[in-house]
Image (tube, rainbow, N blue to C red; front, side, top):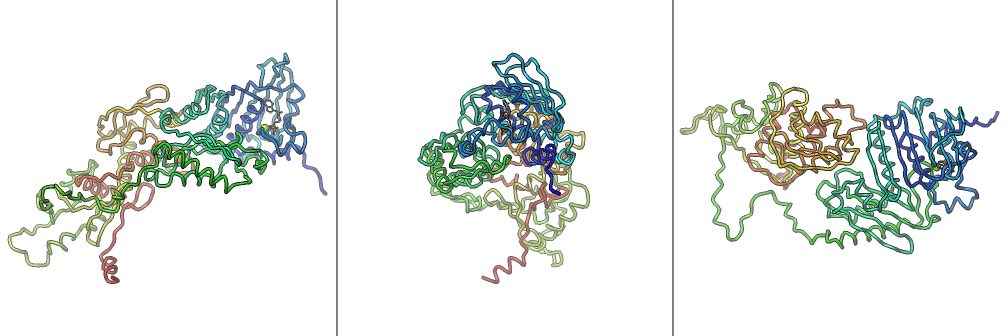
Length: 612
Ligand code: ADP
Ligand code: MG
């Protein structure tokens, strides 16, 4: 009853492991090109690789026999004896990649050795060779993979949007490019050029990929021990990002992922990173004898086993820490002024303090239409939602200053909520630049400043996107930002919408954009940071979210534009923020559904004091 699986089935099964998506096929083809000694590699993708994925190299090429053999399973020129397995330093080592790819696509191989006159062309579809003939072609190898997964519909359906698949492909290309700065790489997508990386040295290659702004940010790391040699660069703390991205480990010319080693690096940054920016960039290259590592766990896996992991952890941590220290980025200890709410502290020679003149309008009702003018640029949300929120404040003045049931006191005019007085100022307290505290009817309300800001901007941007009217714009000092090619493509897809929202951002050539204006009364923030946050957020959302496109963009932009500053707001700004929040349709939640505010009730407070 036992029989051998036919080759094409065995290949398809293997393909399931080796080729998950266009990017994994690309990785294999790139590694083959490098193994073949190529110095120039061009990648062309159509529809992020699902329609066409082609890799052209100028490496050693193959003769007719090898060309045919290369598609056989376990056909490899790289292992002849079992000993080789342990000392292997090339990438491919199982002879499975081409066979697997050819099992799930239409593949066309054209290859020629430099010392031969004619080359070979082989067409193969779902493991079936359909054509083999001599051709005239350039020395080297070109492999074109068409209609990936055409015979595995489940896999094909599993693929994500083009932008996600493209992103994966670019990640693979970057990893290879970062290991081989002396090899030039070009990447074309739907016939526009995303990357053109000339042959160069490592630092320059990193700058080509990460943007030249990183030039000031890269710190050399170099350490040579008996166990491992570590070389490369690590980013200054101020260049750390909010999302993971440029964290690279390589060992003997191969990218690998290691949460464990990553921790060693991140620990070295302890206390140095700006708030909320937890991901410093690093590019670290390990060299150690091949027999000390096990790369042969799984062909597609990028985890690697090291013999001396804890020792390498220590070495890594120390060398990054030392590098940071050398460049004096490890600061002297700063006194933590954080604990206190932002109330100005009187200095010795200050003139005697005058008691603060707080104008309180005990009858202020923030939801009264006429008074809206003070603050929010938004039209008051009409109707119901506001009414609910009104309850928050209703009666507050009554509890403190005015009791409608009590006999009117003296000469005060008991006409609640109708006094045509100056703009109301509710006493507001700011805490660490993050929270705004104020009294409400039921107790103490704490507002998360950033989330509130996000909510306000989100609703406003969404309105701008869905209605033709444009928000007023304010000119800002023009700032240019250079984007990576992929980010630039992503930017182009949202450029029109950004204009609609009120951002004046124009292309400036060479993947650079210039920001001339932003919607009136958005917080002033660093343009580079704004773009960085916007793109990170778009990338994050590019995948699973089922939001409408406009919601996605409004969300990304709101998060970016709300920024992350902790500088205290002026009293007026804080007031504006609160009023803006409560004229939103959904004031209690951030656009991502997290609470914007908390109320500590009187009962809770009382309970606390009872305990004491
Ligand atoms: P592996 O790389 O593990 O050997 P592959 O299936 O990726 O297995 O490739 C099979 C063989 O085909 C390689 O060992 C190599 O001899 C040959 N080959 C593949 N790609 C190229 C290329 N771009 N240039 C030259 N030879 C290649
Ligand atoms: Mg290979």
